[in-house]
Each structure stands twice: as structure tokens, then as C-alpha cells.
Length: 150
Ligand code: HEM
Image 1 (cartoon, rainbow, N blue to C red):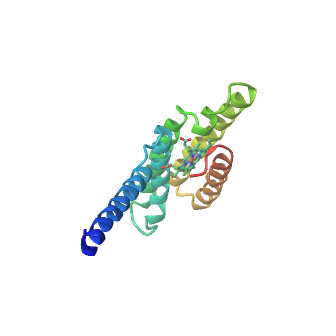
Image 2: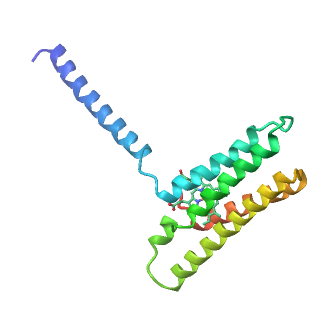
């Protein structure tokens, strides 16, 4: 085998490795989301949408109320599931408490989103701000306690 052919041969092997590595990376990035994660993604995108709305628009409060209502509907659906992290715990009191406590946090968040819908419909900006702080606090607590690091 001459030098040129050896180089070509090694190059082909190297490309094969790169291909395999990127296929693994793609597969990892594309990993199946849990049903709970899918619902949380909806909650999150509906709440992010609020930031895009312009207060000067005529339909502002109605649009915001609708987005919060949809966020709440997805939040309610998350409650049908258990955090992956908790599911992996061995059966016992600690797990039962974690399941009940995570439902408590999701339920409180749901209630806050319902209150926020009312606040938007009443055009009460001050109340909306207060309630936004509350769901953010609950999210922080929920993720700190029950969301596994990515
Ligand atoms: C409005 C408040 C909240 C928002 C916007 C939010 C948003 C999110 C987002 C974006 C994800 C990642 C989804 C993905 O991987 O694609 C997630 C996952 C998760 N969140 Fe939240 N979250 C909120 C409140 C909470 C609360 C109160 C809890 C309490 C239990 C919680 C527990 C979790 C868990 C456990 C996961 C991982 C799902 C799994 O284990 O399968 N989140 N959340």
C-alpha cells in the first residue's frame, strides 16, 4: 500500500468515528421526553409568551388571560405524573412524602395560575406582578427538590 492509500484509509476510519460520535450526540440530544416534561414545556412556553405581548394592544388582557389559562391547563396535566427522580426512590415514607409534597407544589402553582387569569381579566397589573413572583418561587422550590439535573 502506498502512502497516499494509507492516508486515505486512515482518513476514512477517522470520518467513521466522527460520524458515530455525532450520531451518539444527536441521539442524546433527542432523547425521549417524559410526558411530565412535555407538559412542563407547554407551561413554560405559554408563560414566556406573556413577555412578548404588548400592553398597548387592544387585546392584551384577553390574550394574556388565555395564555395563562393554557399554562394552567398544562400544569394540571403535569399532576397526573410523578417526577422521574421520585419514581426511582425506594418505596417507603420518604418516597410517599416526596410524592405528596411535589403534588402540593404543582397544585399551588396551578391555583396561582388560575388567580393570575382572574387578575388579567380584571386588568389588575399589580396583582399580576405579585402572582408572577409566587409561581416563580414555587417553580424554584419544585425544581430544587424534584427535578434531576440535566
Ligand atoms: C410555572 C412553574 C413551572 C415552570 C414554568 C416549569 C418548567 C419546567 C420545564 C421547562 C421543565 C423541563 C422540561 C423539559 O425537560 O423539556 C420542567 C421539568 C420539571 N419540573 Fe417544572 N416548572 C414549573 C413548576 C414546577 C413545580 C411546582 C414542580 C414541583 C414538583 C416542578 C417539577 C418539575 C420536574 C420534576 C421536572 C422534570 C420532569 C420529570 O421528572 O420527568 N416544576 N419544568
